Length: 547
Image 1: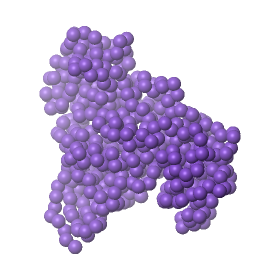
Image 2: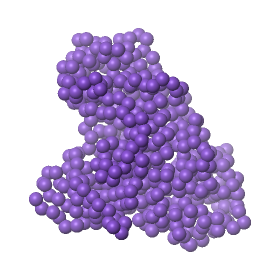
Image 3: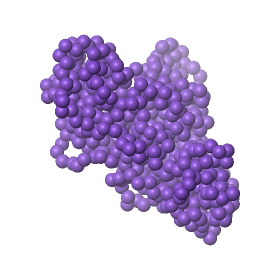
Image 4: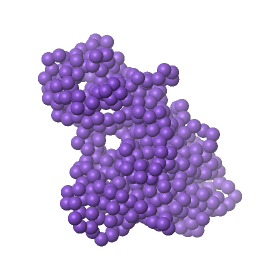
């Protein structure tokens, strides 16, 4: 066994699954060198975590990966809704919801759409694209231990190549732990968790059944909840033809062991659940999973930051957990890029926990409530609670009352009851179609990735804002981009006819909106103040934690 000499990298990511690979993609887009280590030999081979919501797809759109992801998800592109039935031959099947976007209303608020892409199809796309952008991603590589320097300037990690047995020491400025719900990094840091704990357990069974498609018919669902009390579970399509997934309830509290789920038992359970006793079934794989509601008490210790399942677990209904994890990675990526790039203070990273932990708590509660509303098989939900129909409030409406924002209302809930784009500080910036100087139609959300952006009008106040922005950016050494929106000759972005960009963002035509690289509003000014440069200098300092 040999040990390689010490290497240094700005960011070490532990965990190369969905969240770790997303972090790699986002950091690579921002030009931040990094190393991803994953103990498994490759990406996920089991179909799971398939629901990617609007906000996640907006992030992948901005990162340039949305077309490739939709291509990988093409086979399920027409699947919609969740069906509930006693069996597939039950004439009284009920749609819990029929369409994700009934009436096509979502096109008014987002340039993207929901995407049904299983983790085993999504991860290879993220891996390929991140590597093309320079991401160093190594599988069969395990984190053995890590320690932070006494002066707080970095993290030293011991890595093991599980194939060669070779050990390697890495020193990183920051470590991101995306190492799953039983996170060894979180355990090593002694970080506790709070929440309701375990909710229910399932065994996910992949199988092949050529005749099942005849019973499914034209019900191209995302999932079907089968409610036979003797054989309940969830059926999910993989290719809408012969490959399927079945989530069978598992009750370890009743003495059930994982090894009790033999191929024969699983096949019999599936036959009973779908109502086809003679169905020919070939079991191709099994994987246990646990639904829980937990959130870590801390998201960071020193220069070690945690993301995804390592800091939150949620009930699977609505796919909130995976989306929240991807959005953790995006929040973290721009802040690391800003700090490492020297245009933000190190304290900016303190806002990661301030912003993301309350979102995880609120979202986890909504996920459990939605599982109860849908009577998810295997979940003996507590009584009480009302319907959780406004998924959009969770997907797009969450906000940051505290963190890297100025002027946010601390009294507002993190997840509102209903989604309404307001442009208020701490909320996702509204989507608006505009045409740039080259004649290219794009969303305003496409502007937000590499630096803060100031949106102003194209009149005289807009010109004053531009002068102020140039001076403030130079004084703060911040790469601030400025865009003038309007229909006049000085506009570099022209909105759609009759679109009122200022009103959409909650300001007047003489005001300004400062948007962070992650597309969240950092601050807004209703109109032009007497000294706009002074305002911008102070706001940039407050948002980016500059001294």
